[in-house]
Length: 153
Image 1: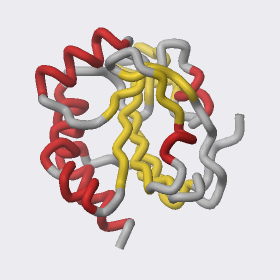
Image 2: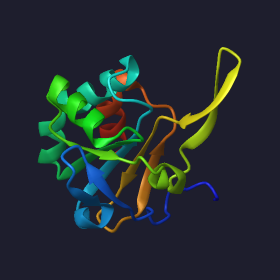
Image 3: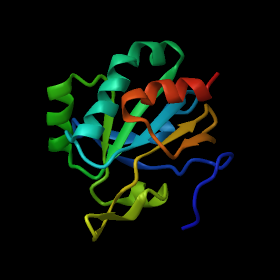
Image 4: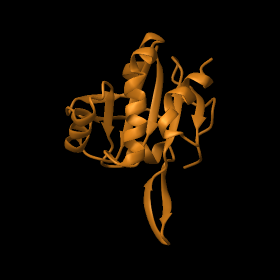
């Protein structure tokens, strides 16, 4: 799989959200989408990022922006994360890793000399036609919304 680049069509996907409902990228055609990938529910960095999007959610939706978070956690884990932190947006369960692989964020990681596969934290901004307009490689978890809004100016 070649790495996705700005200007390319965002890969279509269908999976389930925290409530078990089907969710597809195509259902948001005509809207800007912030598609953010994060390693694990309820870990410090992922919580900071999710809460930053939560705290700025009204401002994003006022601009017609949809926020979707994706990790390989299951629906039950997402549901607990959403409830615990009052997250107002959709979390997509990618338990079969099809979405993370399509977006090139399922990568080899290294912690304390131990290699393992995991999600590279990355954010894709997708326009109304489904084209990737920006890719944020170095996500500032505490200021994720500011990074997005800066690029959308």
